[in-house]
Figure 1 (cartoon, rainbow, N blue to C red):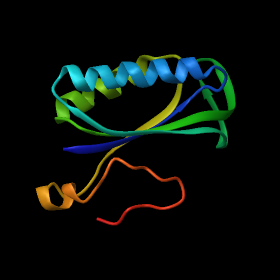
Figure 2 (cartoon, rainbow, N blue to C red):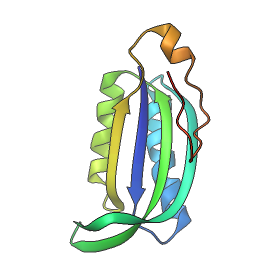
Figure 3 (cartoon, rainbow, N blue to C red):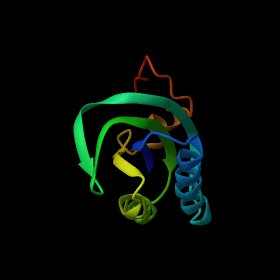
Figure 4 (cartoon, rainbow, N blue to C red):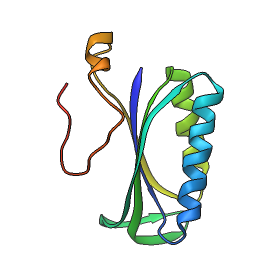
Length: 118
């Protein structure tokens, strides 16, 4: 299945964001999944102040990743990100209706200002 992960990391060091992306990506690749695309969106204000891991956050560093993987791998990625204290929030959604034809139309390019229709 094709999944899209949108994650918000505590702002500060870009190296932390890269390390989190590398960790999630290696979980996917080691289990036979495929990464279609990764996009760094940068630091933005959160919709509302969030308390996570005993800290208040007003801003977050956003990134998005599209990947093909089984539901078991997707669960492993969610568990790993949920335990990381550098993560503020994340959401993973299944894309498409599951047919090969609809999934083949979704590329790895993840533009900020437009969404692809499928």
